[in-house]
Length: 263
Image (cartoon, rainbow, N blue to C red; front, side, top):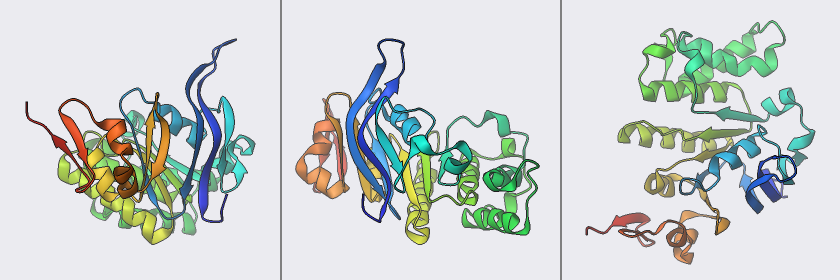
């Protein structure tokens, strides 16, 4: 593991404990996420992306192997310590509709505020900075339930930014957004990684967009396993085609785009 490595998988097995016979989803996974890069996790439905994200986030223990976060096994980290290293943006946010945008972003400071959750001057400064970074200042006192899908997504990314973790993991951050909003969110995350040195790791089904904007991609498949690299290298090697080409759809490595073959 080199000094620029944020998260490292070593012979990782993911899945669900099931008494005598655990249910294995993926096995033999070896990969690395580097500081200051945005990496996209790509795969078809049922490939095991959500299980891998849960394992890398520390929500689900590995069935085998290990996940290292800045050189430390995730199994040795307590919840509070892990929350200072990894911020997570999930898709289920139904419990926050009545909170204001600012109140949601303030929740990102909970790993630092202690039992009573009182924000200090530095906590408020971190919240202000995160809201400004996402361009949400004029909406800070709006209830989250009144925001558009894109504004809500930015709010939860701002919460993760306010958490001041070196790693941010996002589950389908562009789901349910219109195309311009998808592009905006992906560009914001890419700028965040490059400007702050944050490691951004996200899953998405927006393949074309991800392969144009990410620094690296992880391709995951039940049969083919996990392969990683830059989009250009994965395209040139034929890996993207092997993982995603289907009847009527093929990947053109020269343009970094998928082509739909009209029947």
